[in-house]
Length: 70
Image (tube, rainbow, N blue to C red; front, side, top):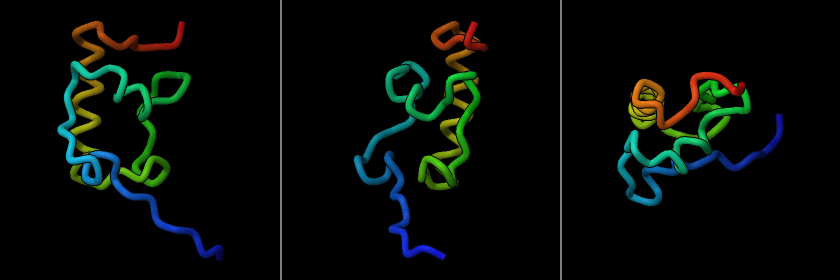
């Protein structure tokens, strides 16, 4: 086991709200294939991870984010 510093939630630290219209922020939490990254990898807390998943899905419906990478 490594002694790694735990990641802090991006939204809690910066006092931000998760917004489906903020595509620049949402892109940080999806991979090349447009899949939502897990909170364990990004360091987002569980509460914001649920909000983030909903925001990404809404952005896809509104065509702000592509559903796939092609």
